Amino acid sequence: MQRSVKHDAIDYVIRIVDSPLALNAGHWNSLLARQAHATPFMRHEYLAALHESGSAGPATGWTPRFITLERGGELVAACALYLKDHSYGEYVFDWAWANAYAQHGLAYYPKALVAVPFTPVPGSRLLARDAAARQALITALLDWCRDENLSSLHLLFAGDEDLAACTSAGMMLRHTVQFHWMNVAPTLGTDVSSLHPEGADFPRGGPSENSAPTLFRDFDDFLASLAQEKRKKIKQERRKVAQAGVTFRWSLGADISAQDWDFFYRCYERTYLEHGNAPYLNRDFFARMAGTMPSNWLLFVAERKVGGVAQAIASSLIAVSGENEETTGSSDLKNAPATAGRVAYGRYWGALERVDCLHFETCYYQPLQWCIEHGYQRFEGGAQGEHKMARALLPVKTSSTHWLAHPAFADAVERFLEREGEGVAGYLGALSNRSPFKQAN
Image (cartoon, rainbow, N blue to C red; front, top):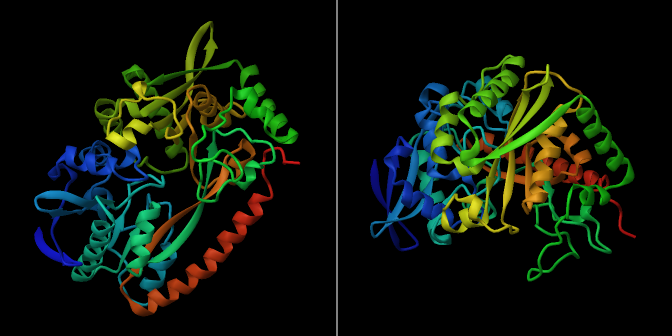
């Protein structure tokens, strides 16, 4: 589908396609590289793998409608939109809204969703060459939703520029809380608990914009920055795993063997099946990741010797990005310098054996140690999980925006979000008083 639209006296051509494969991968990735909050999960290869593997497609309730804006034959804005007939795999929960619609005889589904399927990682969602193009894109999205008689539009885990454009267009803000770790040693007179709630790279009163961050020298240096109780707890948890005879190895990118990918998937699948659910992502998706985005993946494998032979018992898969990817669209992380722009994302894990504290070691302590050793600035621990604070992952506010076509329901949801937002602000305030780090004098 293609049509023309004018926004602020600028003519754009809008294209709506039903598959990421219909888009030029190079143009998409080049536009992504211009964004302030680019992540590997918005790369064309990632979205295409979700589609081609069948993990996110019409059969699983994710019907793609990728929308692009062109000006003078050049791609100037784009987003990954999905029509949803359920709310699974989103991590921003609106089941109560859907139930309220149903109780009043109204259809909430299908709804429009701008998000990365199954991926609660904050980042750019409205890819745009400039602010005008971004505003034109959200205007086009809302117009299209009205034309299609959709109940609502939701943009999840968005970047600051996206949020500004959406609120300017009249969409409602919603906030949630995640927990992220920063590779920043506390400085004299600075309490790490004062990190900016939006996830600033440095605590207030810490290094200036033009100074290099004071990174932890090693894991012991990181532990030394913690309050005694937290430091003792982490040491005890790590000791339990080591005393159980568990050791770890890691592989990055093309060094992850096919055998290790297979073992990881056994662990990942088992985690879901133990909770009575099928995994969101199938084996074919990860095979495509190994083929098209190998450098963006880091695998930890836990092993224990049985009869003198090391046997794998658990694994965690971490996504990694670097400054060169965010600025050039390249994913060659081995050649990227260690800078504040490098981020690791905790994504998937599973175990075939139960060992006390194995989850903490596999999903947090091993990745944090790796980040320190390789100069990574941030580790994002994923959705929810207040227990992560005891492992020095601090609360960060993440935001989404929402539009509902029905005026009465829109008013009711707006009032609800105001109350919910006050609760989130209070929750963040309470958490700030529970810093795991040593308090400044």
